Amino acid sequence: MITLTHFLVVSACIFCIGLYAVLSKRNAIMILVGIELMINAAVLNLVAFGRYDKVNYGGQVFALFAIVLAAAAVAVGLAIILNVYRKYKTINPDNITDLRD
Amino acid sequence: MRDVALHLSDTLDHILASIPLFQPEFALIAAFLLSIGATLFTDRLWKQSSFFIAIIGYIISFVSLLPQLHQPASAFFGMLLIDDFSVFARGIILFALLISTIFIQQHFKGKIFQKNLGDVYTVLLTAGLGLNLLTITTNWLLAFIAIETVSISSYILVGYFSEHKKQSEAAMKYVLFGSVCAAVMLYGLSLLYGFTGNLDFVSAAHLQGLTAAPQVMTSIALLFVFTGIGFKLSFVPFHAWAPDVYEGAPTPVTAFLSTVPKVGAIVLLARITQAWASSLFYFGELTILFLTVVAIVTMLAGNLIALRQQNVKRMMAYSSIGHTGFLLMAVLVAPSGNPSILLFYLSGYVLMNLAAFAFIDSLEQKTGATTLESYSGLGKRMPIVFTCFTFIGISLIGLPPTAGFVGKLLVFTSVFEGYQSSGDLPYLLLLITGALTSVISLFYYFKIPLYAFLRDSQSDQNSNMPIRLIIAIGIVLTALVLGIGIFPDFLLGLFK
Image 1 (cartoon, rainbow over the protein chains, first blue to last red):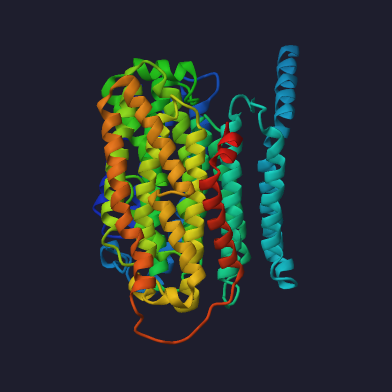
Image 2: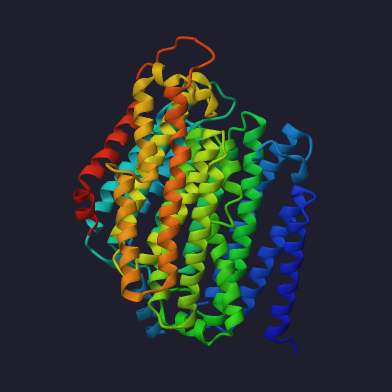
């Protein structure tokens, strides 16, 4: 029997994996992948909770919007990273440090 | 079957009745669609068509905003909440967007691009739509959509031109930092939804659900949600992107970033604080404690780091972080009073920052000066620009007779009243930090007239500056800042 708790544990794990990918930043694409994992953890949460909200389906609607927005943000992010690669020939954020105090 | 039909016609009636209330946003949407068309077709015939469509869109949106004044209403099943607070905030946003659009048009007028400049106006219109939504909602779903709309448009604005390496770097840092914050906020929102089963953050069910949930979980979820709002407001510890992005982005885009998104985000934050602080549950205190600590740290960090900046845009970035701390202070006292103080401070802040960036941009274009050092001796060559710039500096510090002074005075007075009536230590700490950081800010804002008037320049090329539109706008904004500083009653009476 899969209960709500299982969903929450899985989504918490996905969120932590995503956060790790973001914080260990070796590669800008990996950071985007990490962000995507974090958003999907939230989407899983929303859908799991949405099962108990039978009146408004707020969670499911929210999940749909979240997926769309994530796709839009990632599209913009990839375009910008491509642009950075053309200028710097690298996408490791640690090596791109023209702007700093 | 008949039940369903009855229900449906009620729903349709409600939606139809709500549509007129959405008119200002419809104007922006229409302008957005038209300007996409214009960039594709008519820009070849007449280069400025998308620019004028954007300008007319803002003006129509502003005009259709006026009937909503003093007519509080709610529309689309409580998704939209229209009150005077949101009307004034949207007025400020549309005004600032209009000015930023003119800045962009002026900045790129003489340059030749591979890319189509018209797209920038389209993206600015989208940002305006998102910000308008941010001010009229109490629903987490709509708030999240609005925040993401504004964020994505801002990423595009920063990265679109990529004239040199720094711009693409700034865009990358912005998009990565922003997306992480949005993802964390979304996770927090999913937890809040789980606790309450309700997405309207002012509703009773939401407050009850939050109180019933385990305290640790609620705190974590709230912290996650504040991450997203904190990114948009750039308060400490989510301010790391601001200096890099402000320095790297084209100057008119920086003018937009430092003013308009903050208005929308601060209105949302004020609504959340208003709804939660008035409830007697523990997370109301938690929110207030969190905001107090953040406000104090933000004011200190922003103003102290600004002291050792040489790049003017970087300095303005830290100065705007410091002002965010002040805005948080104004949010904290808003529940006890009314939002008029917050609105006054916001409008003063928007005017000051737009004027400052008008001068920074025109100096950068004319002389290529971007550091304080390179302003040396320019004061004698361009006395009008630097006199006005000095007035703006005075206003940013908060000295009379300027709008910045009146704004700070009002915030201080209401914090002091809060301290007298409750005797809480946080209020006292806020007062002390606010006064201290205002004094600190004196030292870096006065570097501008110091270098411009008292230091001699190394090079002696004689380029006198013709009065161009961007400088004229800067001078008018300075006059407004001074006018509001001398006659604050006009604006305060309006916001009452």
